Length: 232
Image (cartoon, one colour):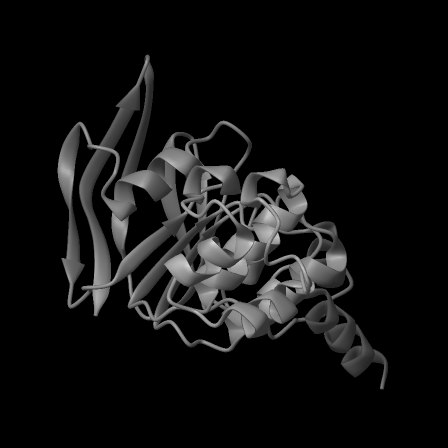
Protein backbone atom coordinates (compact mmCIF):
# COMPACT_ATOMS: atom_id res chain seq x y z
CA UNK A 1 0.00 0.00 0.00
CA UNK A 2 1.33 3.42 -0.89
CA UNK A 3 0.43 6.82 -2.28
CA UNK A 4 2.91 8.24 -4.79
CA UNK A 5 3.43 11.74 -6.17
CA UNK A 6 5.16 11.14 -9.50
CA UNK A 7 6.70 14.21 -11.20
CA UNK A 8 3.83 16.23 -9.75
CA UNK A 9 3.39 19.90 -10.63
CA UNK A 10 0.66 22.03 -9.04
CA UNK A 11 -0.10 25.55 -10.21
CA UNK A 12 -2.59 28.20 -9.17
CA UNK A 13 -2.70 31.89 -10.19
CA UNK A 14 1.01 32.18 -10.89
CA UNK A 15 2.08 29.99 -7.99
CA UNK A 16 3.66 26.57 -8.50
CA UNK A 17 4.70 23.59 -6.37
CA UNK A 18 6.51 20.41 -7.37
CA UNK A 19 6.31 17.11 -5.52
CA UNK A 20 8.03 13.77 -5.89
CA UNK A 21 7.90 10.96 -3.37
CA UNK A 22 6.18 7.91 -1.93
CA UNK A 23 3.98 7.88 1.18
CA UNK A 24 4.06 4.36 2.62
CA UNK A 25 2.16 3.07 5.68
CA UNK A 26 2.84 5.12 8.78
CA UNK A 27 2.35 8.67 10.01
CA UNK A 28 3.78 11.32 7.69
CA UNK A 29 4.18 14.92 8.83
CA UNK A 30 4.28 17.61 6.12
CA UNK A 31 5.22 21.11 7.26
CA UNK A 32 5.83 24.43 5.59
CA UNK A 33 5.07 28.14 5.99
CA UNK A 34 1.55 29.49 5.64
CA UNK A 35 0.84 29.88 1.93
CA UNK A 36 3.47 27.35 0.88
CA UNK A 37 0.93 25.01 -0.73
CA UNK A 38 0.12 22.47 1.98
CA UNK A 39 -3.64 22.64 1.39
CA UNK A 40 -3.26 22.45 -2.39
CA UNK A 41 -1.00 19.42 -2.13
CA UNK A 42 -3.32 17.72 0.37
CA UNK A 43 -6.24 18.29 -2.00
CA UNK A 44 -4.26 16.93 -4.94
CA UNK A 45 -3.25 13.77 -3.07
CA UNK A 46 -6.91 13.27 -2.16
CA UNK A 47 -7.94 13.62 -5.79
CA UNK A 48 -9.93 16.87 -5.62
CA UNK A 49 -7.32 19.21 -7.15
CA UNK A 50 -6.13 18.49 -10.66
CA UNK A 51 -2.31 18.68 -11.08
CA UNK A 52 -0.86 20.62 -13.99
CA UNK A 53 1.52 17.75 -14.70
CA UNK A 54 2.53 14.37 -13.33
CA UNK A 55 0.27 11.89 -11.63
CA UNK A 56 -0.77 10.50 -8.28
CA UNK A 57 -0.71 6.73 -7.83
CA UNK A 58 -2.83 5.12 -5.12
CA UNK A 59 -1.63 1.54 -4.81
CA UNK A 60 -3.98 -0.75 -2.84
CA UNK A 61 -5.81 2.26 -1.41
CA UNK A 62 -9.57 1.90 -1.79
CA UNK A 63 -10.82 3.95 1.16
CA UNK A 64 -9.23 7.41 1.36
CA UNK A 65 -10.54 10.51 3.09
CA UNK A 66 -9.50 14.16 3.37
CA UNK A 67 -10.15 16.38 6.39
CA UNK A 68 -10.17 20.01 5.29
CA UNK A 69 -9.12 22.79 7.64
CA UNK A 70 -12.61 24.27 8.00
CA UNK A 71 -14.97 21.62 9.46
CA UNK A 72 -18.15 23.28 8.20
CA UNK A 73 -17.18 22.16 4.69
CA UNK A 74 -17.88 18.57 5.77
CA UNK A 75 -21.28 18.99 7.43
CA UNK A 76 -24.14 16.96 5.95
CA UNK A 77 -26.40 16.42 8.98
CA UNK A 78 -28.92 19.04 10.16
CA UNK A 79 -28.68 17.97 13.79
CA UNK A 80 -25.56 16.76 15.58
CA UNK A 81 -27.02 13.25 15.86
CA UNK A 82 -27.69 13.27 12.11
CA UNK A 83 -24.09 14.25 11.44
CA UNK A 84 -22.75 11.39 13.56
CA UNK A 85 -25.10 8.89 11.94
CA UNK A 86 -23.97 10.05 8.50
CA UNK A 87 -20.57 8.54 9.39
CA UNK A 88 -22.29 5.30 10.45
CA UNK A 89 -21.13 5.72 14.05
CA UNK A 90 -22.93 5.33 17.41
CA UNK A 91 -24.23 8.72 18.55
CA UNK A 92 -23.72 8.62 22.33
CA UNK A 93 -20.29 7.00 22.24
CA UNK A 94 -19.03 9.39 19.57
CA UNK A 95 -20.31 12.48 21.36
CA UNK A 96 -18.70 11.31 24.60
CA UNK A 97 -15.33 11.07 22.82
CA UNK A 98 -15.85 14.51 21.29
CA UNK A 99 -16.81 16.09 24.61
CA UNK A 100 -20.27 16.93 23.29
CA UNK A 101 -22.47 14.73 25.47
CA UNK A 102 -26.08 15.90 25.49
CA UNK A 103 -25.73 17.95 22.30
CA UNK A 104 -27.26 15.40 19.92
CA UNK A 105 -30.37 17.50 19.19
CA UNK A 106 -28.44 20.73 18.59
CA UNK A 107 -28.29 22.09 15.04
CA UNK A 108 -24.86 21.09 13.76
CA UNK A 109 -23.96 24.46 12.30
CA UNK A 110 -24.74 26.27 15.57
CA UNK A 111 -21.74 24.59 17.22
CA UNK A 112 -18.67 26.77 17.61
CA UNK A 113 -15.91 26.10 15.11
CA UNK A 114 -13.85 24.39 17.81
CA UNK A 115 -16.77 22.14 18.77
CA UNK A 116 -17.47 21.39 15.12
CA UNK A 117 -13.81 20.53 14.56
CA UNK A 118 -13.88 18.14 17.51
CA UNK A 119 -17.01 16.49 16.19
CA UNK A 120 -15.68 16.21 12.65
CA UNK A 121 -12.30 14.74 13.61
CA UNK A 122 -13.85 12.31 16.08
CA UNK A 123 -16.20 11.06 13.38
CA UNK A 124 -13.52 10.88 10.69
CA UNK A 125 -10.95 9.11 12.86
CA UNK A 126 -13.66 6.74 14.07
CA UNK A 127 -14.10 5.35 10.56
CA UNK A 128 -12.15 2.70 8.71
CA UNK A 129 -9.79 4.11 6.08
CA UNK A 130 -6.76 2.89 4.18
CA UNK A 131 -5.44 6.45 4.02
CA UNK A 132 -6.31 9.60 5.95
CA UNK A 133 -5.14 13.05 4.82
CA UNK A 134 -5.46 15.78 7.46
CA UNK A 135 -5.12 19.45 6.51
CA UNK A 136 -4.38 21.56 9.61
CA UNK A 137 -6.18 19.17 11.97
CA UNK A 138 -5.09 21.10 15.08
CA UNK A 139 -6.45 24.51 14.01
CA UNK A 140 -9.16 25.75 16.36
CA UNK A 141 -8.44 23.17 19.08
CA UNK A 142 -7.13 23.74 22.59
CA UNK A 143 -4.15 21.76 23.92
CA UNK A 144 -6.33 19.10 25.52
CA UNK A 145 -8.13 18.39 22.26
CA UNK A 146 -4.90 18.48 20.26
CA UNK A 147 -3.49 15.86 22.62
CA UNK A 148 -6.60 13.70 22.23
CA UNK A 149 -6.42 13.86 18.42
CA UNK A 150 -2.71 12.99 18.53
CA UNK A 151 -3.53 9.93 20.66
CA UNK A 152 -6.18 8.86 18.13
CA UNK A 153 -3.65 9.21 15.30
CA UNK A 154 -1.01 7.26 17.26
CA UNK A 155 -3.39 4.32 17.66
CA UNK A 156 -2.56 3.66 13.98
CA UNK A 157 -6.02 2.35 13.24
CA UNK A 158 -5.53 3.78 9.75
CA UNK A 159 -2.51 2.35 7.88
CA UNK A 160 -1.47 5.62 6.21
CA UNK A 161 -1.90 9.07 7.75
CA UNK A 162 -0.56 12.25 6.15
CA UNK A 163 -0.72 15.39 8.30
CA UNK A 164 -0.29 18.84 6.77
CA UNK A 165 0.30 21.38 9.53
CA UNK A 166 2.26 24.31 10.88
CA UNK A 167 1.47 23.28 14.48
CA UNK A 168 4.42 23.90 16.76
CA UNK A 169 3.17 22.88 20.20
CA UNK A 170 1.35 19.54 20.19
CA UNK A 171 2.29 16.88 17.63
CA UNK A 172 1.84 13.10 17.38
CA UNK A 173 4.69 10.66 16.98
CA UNK A 174 5.67 10.53 13.30
CA UNK A 175 7.39 8.02 11.08
CA UNK A 176 8.49 10.34 8.25
CA UNK A 177 9.04 14.10 8.01
CA UNK A 178 8.45 16.14 4.86
CA UNK A 179 8.81 19.87 4.26
CA UNK A 180 7.75 22.29 1.59
CA UNK A 181 10.82 24.36 0.82
CA UNK A 182 11.47 26.60 -2.17
CA UNK A 183 8.21 25.60 -3.89
CA UNK A 184 9.08 21.90 -3.69
CA UNK A 185 8.15 19.02 -1.42
CA UNK A 186 11.27 17.66 0.26
CA UNK A 187 11.47 14.40 2.21
CA UNK A 188 13.69 14.83 5.28
CA UNK A 189 13.56 11.08 5.95
CA UNK A 190 12.50 8.67 8.65
CA UNK A 191 12.25 9.61 12.31
CA UNK A 192 14.45 9.92 14.36
CA UNK A 193 17.26 10.32 11.80
CA UNK A 194 15.34 13.08 9.99
CA UNK A 195 14.89 15.31 13.03
CA UNK A 196 18.21 17.23 12.76
CA UNK A 197 17.46 18.03 9.10
CA UNK A 198 13.97 19.34 9.85
CA UNK A 199 14.21 23.10 9.30
CA UNK A 200 10.71 23.78 10.56
CA UNK A 201 11.12 21.83 13.79
CA UNK A 202 9.40 23.22 16.92
CA UNK A 203 11.59 25.25 19.23
CA UNK A 204 11.61 22.56 21.91
CA UNK A 205 13.13 20.09 19.45
CA UNK A 206 15.63 22.61 18.14
CA UNK A 207 16.68 23.45 21.71
CA UNK A 208 17.10 19.78 22.60
CA UNK A 209 19.32 19.28 19.55
CA UNK A 210 21.39 22.33 20.48
CA UNK A 211 21.98 20.76 23.90
CA UNK A 212 23.23 17.61 22.22
CA UNK A 213 20.15 15.50 22.93
CA UNK A 214 18.82 13.03 20.38
CA UNK A 215 15.02 12.70 20.75
CA UNK A 216 13.48 9.40 19.62
CA UNK A 217 10.50 11.21 18.13
CA UNK A 218 9.06 14.69 17.64
CA UNK A 219 6.76 15.14 20.64
CA UNK A 220 7.53 17.50 23.51
CA UNK A 221 7.99 14.63 25.95
CA UNK A 222 10.40 12.97 23.50
CA UNK A 223 12.61 16.08 23.70
CA UNK A 224 12.28 16.17 27.49
CA UNK A 225 13.17 12.49 27.85
CA UNK A 226 16.20 12.93 25.59
CA UNK A 227 17.44 15.77 27.79
CA UNK A 228 16.83 13.70 30.92
CA UNK A 229 18.85 10.80 29.50
CA UNK A 230 21.77 13.17 28.95
CA UNK A 231 21.81 14.22 32.59
CA UNK A 232 20.92 10.88 34.18
